[in-house]
Image 1 (cartoon, helix red, strand yellow):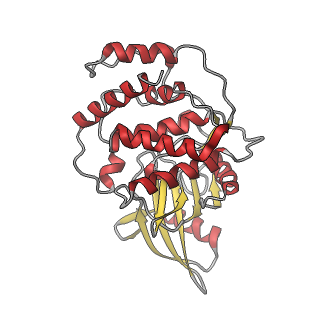
Image 2 (spheres, one colour; image 1 turned 180 degrees about the horizontal axis):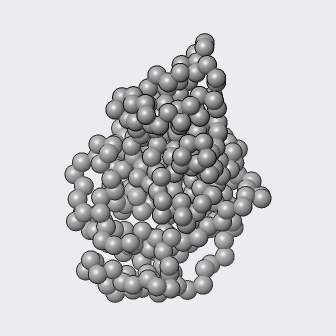
Length: 308
């Protein structure tokens, strides 16, 4: 076991990375990347014969998730290759260990993008505008032949009114609405986990989108709704609404808005009482409480009700 900067990685993984990048490469540093909670992600700096190269390693060590979707490494690799067509910087695939034969766990090695996550932007309006414009470009990609399709994380027929909310009637209305037949939509390439923690910035400009493991073909409203969920919890309904307005402006008349998909995205996070997302606190966000999350989620839910 090699330990660099306090983060151990088995020698077999380091050796696999070196073989995948350059036989004469050596490892200079290994650093854990925070902001996500579903898998272990590390940034590795490699010394090559004539240069230094930074790569990112994702280890699929969430046994439950891998059991449900055993093709996750191949899924993300395919998503990254399609994401390159968006024109938005995204990681490039270097190597895939789909079964864990080489690394002990399924793993994906990819290039590292310039930039970092920004959750307290100096200009929030511009920050939202750039995120919205990037998402419109993602949805415009020709995804013909991509084999992964959208599905809800929650079992809609089994949904129950949350017992933590003082607004049970409103939640029942939401649940009744999402149980109705889906409205027609134009299938497109969606990121499926588009939110501020998966967007990178450099010198005030959006420098990349990461974490494509859930990308699939589905309704664009799901991406919009998921991002708005996160924005509403982080900052409040007004910020979530500003993102929607920016998306609609960039998408133009081709986008047919339907709040149904935002309601579906909302119920997709109903797995218990709202709690502060660890990925936010890991990146230094303070002042959030579980109580505030519940209040903001209720407020966002009611704002969606008003759009029906």
